[in-house]
Image (tube, rainbow, N blue to C red; front, side, top):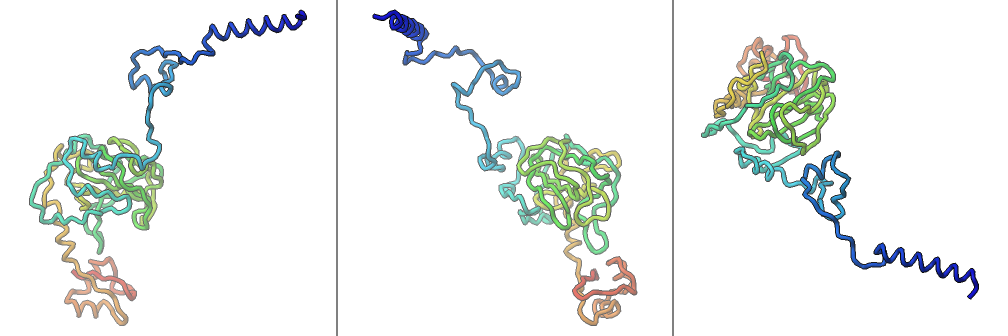
Length: 305
């Protein structure tokens, strides 16, 4: 055999023996060395250089559609939730349509852990404002001020509307819901789970607003509760750690139900409306925030009770 062929044969034999001894041609897979690894170690960026995905199947939630329905999540927590909260809407502030003016029971609501959404002063209170009822309380904010979440809970609505502007609704684990309106920017997403004190947005002047402020509402089953019944806005602390919620908190709605409006038609004037309703012109002006010489528009609603 020629010398050069012999050299190639010897080289090939040496390479084959080396690879065979290393197990390259073996069908058996190397057995991984196992040792206890905690969940925190697997998820920590400081974990050992160990690849768990090679030997374990770990599922990640990449699509919100795969998340457990929110009411199932809430029911797994040690809070008593009304069965109406099985309704979950990310668009309607009050999808429950429950009248609480005649509620028979008293509901205990845990207010501990409250964080004020803004620590600034009140600019407009809960109650009647001209001919409309103001269902929340306005707190002064400046553009870009952080607005904080009041209680632990889950974001139900993030939306923009003509009246509220940019607003957020959060369902809390204690049974309440809160609304934050006129935000300049929303910093949370629907379905986010928040702790009390987490930011929900930035103060603004969006929607039907005449200046920078936070419109803050507290609701139970969609029905507004006067925030002053829960919170002392002088020092921004809760009045009691437990709220005993009952029908008395919704008596104001009976007054709202008594309100009557006159819809202005062609030829109507304040004197004619006063004659037809029996309400003095001065009271009509006071109820509607108008003057005797104000021009009425066809279709305008004039409150007379």
